[in-house]
Image (cartoon, rainbow, N blue to C red):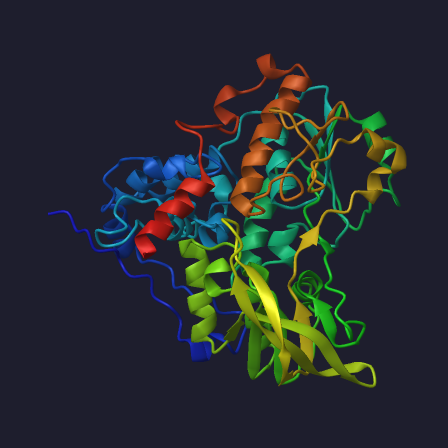
Length: 484
């Protein structure tokens, strides 16, 4: 008889996991649990329609159900080279739209992927890449994040000579610097990135384009260039007092901690912002020794970035378990300083006002001032891409959207011939799985541009647009309807 009840994903006790970065909140499925959960799937494949990367979700759930995790990993590799990473940090819109949501709960798609990938310490045991027929083509990749690494993997296994340039001392991009180690352990990153670079990728760390190497040199010396630099330029609020020494932007804060720095955050930490970065900063602060962590967001709980989605709810639930506090509908307007250090945050309570049919706006009620103590303030208020490295002349040629992202065609090429782009710098979803989709498109686009499609192994090209085009909106609407 088919079991419709979702196999529970066990959690490490919050009082234990909050003490260290070395403990993941979610425990891995056992083999019995993974097979039982995968066996719940009815094979409708609606999940793939919600997946930005068009993963063959039904296929790898089926292989897990019959006890073949190796085949699960092979199926994932048809589209992306990060099964263990995606198995931990994907936004899993596929689960939001699962038809079993109201019948025992959605299939734990992300967790099944993690289970399968974690069975193997070395993918070379199970992933057989094509015997390289080296092509007389060279491609430069700027940025060692998920998009750049995906492009590097699928081009290099086809025999393209790939040079990857990364400004930091380690590869991974936002996976390394923006996702805390309790969510994405270093050994998982090293396993998957190591397998990618072992395919013959020429890696240049600590190399800033525009300084050690110019953008013009890359476009001159390589047959194509892929730009996957992500969004790492912080957006600051400019709140009075933000020049204090104990004020950080979330992106920089997470990067410094992820690269090994211990930041003394004190006991009372205030996070300004309400999205995923704010959650990561709050839980990181707890692991650095903070006792009271407040996330302050100017809108309502239902207005927070990423909502409605299971992923947003899960991350908030885990934060609450770790005693993070949320202050909704508030506007900090001054960081109170003593000397050059913030000691408190002054804020107003907002009233949400709806004007016509648009989104409700937060209107501060300035008749009463509230104050909260703060030993440290972290602004998780967004970030953008810095394109200054390509130079003024190239910037004039680069067509941008009103939001400042490069305009790319169906092959992923920008308005500069031979220059492709993808990932957070071009995709409004700004998540890892969408970056992979951009990269898959660019791989096919670059190979076509290089006029070598007739020389590559078709069965090792990343699969694009399996079945129907995905819709983030459809997945979120489905989840919102179920919540209400």
